[in-house]
Amino acid sequence: MKALFIPFLAIMMALMPPGEAFAGKVSLPKDVTKIDVKFDPAARIDSGRLKAGDSVSIYLAEDYKIGGITVIEAGAKGTAIVKKAVKASRPGNPGMIEISFVDLKPKGSYRSKDGGAIKLSGVAADKGGGRKIISWLFILGLLIKGGQGEIDTALVYPATVSETIILESR
Image (cartoon, rainbow, N blue to C red):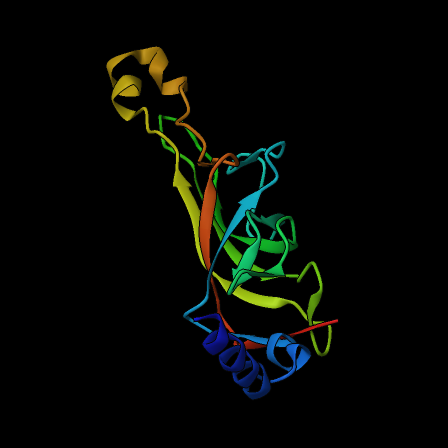
């Protein structure tokens, strides 16, 4: 058994490309590659504080691996943009916030050739709670605002690579 294994291993090693050529480049195809992102847990992201066009930082939730090799390290920083933000109002109208993921800068030993970011798509959104019934039942309820739309920063959100990119090891 051992005598057959050694020649087999030698043949396989001869047929394989060099390690750098094999593991040196990876492709992240658009609309197929899924990654998980998160927000800074200390941040407060709600419709009462932010407005459309504001920028929000996102981070890669966990290492992105291909074939057991870490291609992008957890904590890689990216950008998201507030697309819609409606403040809660009286009487009991809820707020709403929608955030679109924009990009993620690779962290680790793999980078794009031009040093660019990985383009992302995906949305995190929330509609605050309404308090319309309470506001109409009680006269003082007309002074009650609805709840703000608030993104839960303890959660992980799915994002998709929106533009194919090739990363190379450095």
